[in-house]
Image 1 (cartoon, rainbow, N blue to C red):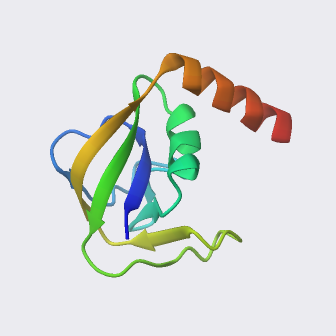
Image 2: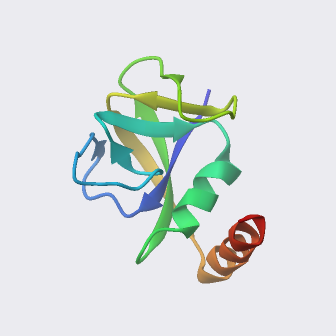
Length: 104
């Protein structure tokens, strides 16, 4: 199974929880949030400040369902290794942001 994490550029090859990061797509409350849906990860990446990336990750353990989400493809884990990064173009970011704003 392929796991994704969407957000800003991650320095290094490791994604760990950081309590000062309040973004839903990032890390918060001791967990790293991942998904099996690349489109969901890209949508979260589109909301990031600066350059946006979809990170293909390898979770430390089998992720558990995200209790804060009703989606069956949103999960959380205690950390993950970054396998590769996929840049989200400015054009795609703009399209996704417009879609997100229309949904709100």
